[in-house]
Length: 66
Image 1 (cartoon, one colour):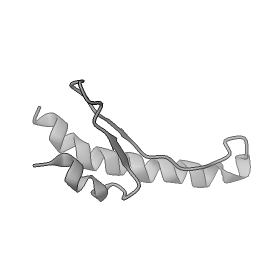
Image 2 (cartoon, helix red, strand yellow; image 1 turned 30 degrees about the vertical axis):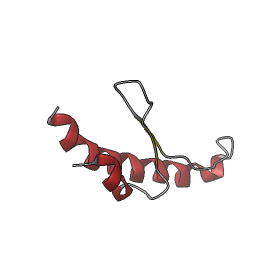
Image 3 (spheres, rainbow, N blue to C red; image 1 turned 90 degrees about the horizontal axis):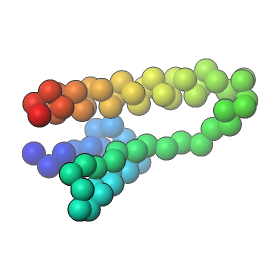
Image 4 (cartoon, rainbow, N blue to C red; image 1 turned 45 degrees about the horizontal axis):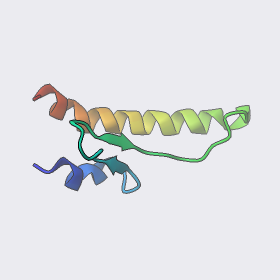
């Protein structure tokens, strides 16, 4: 299975950095937010929760097979 090809299950905005010449890759997802804006913290925490759960759901089965 080509994991990079199906990574959009997490988000189409996810960035897969193969890190050529290394035995690892970096998978990142970014958003913009003002961490000093306490009025927006609930939205920021919700965003983190949603995508952390998606990362876990997607990567846990893959990692346990390694």
